Length: 305
Image 1 (cartoon, one colour):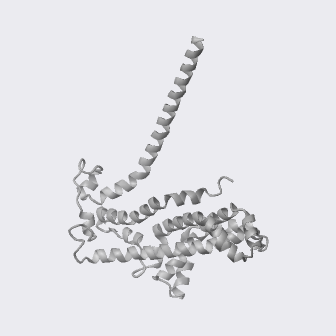
Image 2 (cartoon, rainbow, N blue to C red):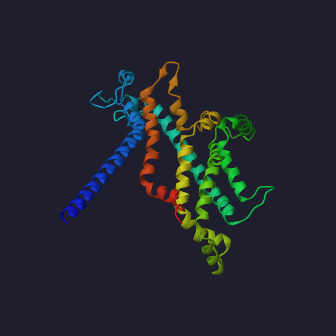
């Protein structure tokens, strides 16, 4: 009996040791991966407080490898010493920042509205366009993401020139909406397919129209997915550079174009570029922090039925 108890105690001890070791390995891998993901942001933020020798030497840790300076923020007129002074660079930065905000948010909102309508139709009704059925149409939308943007450079440039949309916010909103619309349609189609059709049928029996059932029943249930699609569209449009550099020159230029302009014949102004990049990253980081719950809920909706 004592041997049996000893064996049971040994088994429990070994099981606890295996559990502890597995937790250590899992959390160690998670911490390592988190450090790898966060390091580019850490390097960008710290570089905005460096001077040229610190950048060239590759110093990383503030107060240990180098003494932080606000030269990068001072060059943008955003340091404590210059924030209350007149600064043409700060005015230029704020103009580009507001362009990015207006263009990315407007394009993301339009993409979610149009994408939700298209996805709802593809998930609830049967269509036939030549040899294409619903699944073929859905794949056609998704396949547009495979097309490299540079292929569209010349036709879009000519079209925008004829329509007088070059260097305009409306033109950028239109091209960005078309750019993210396929992925919004694909995400929302899965969201709507995870919602039982019986809910709409019950709403129709109660006297609601198709639009009424969509707006009052389906949209509230699919709202987390719409938020996730909006945030994904916002990230893609906020960071987009190719069309912003191609189709804008003065009035509608966005923040990524301004960040890239810190390179020149005299070299790269690392501290100014890092300060601009930090200012450009910050809004997306805040969005991700405050809406993390909605992002996860929207991306995992329909995964388990």
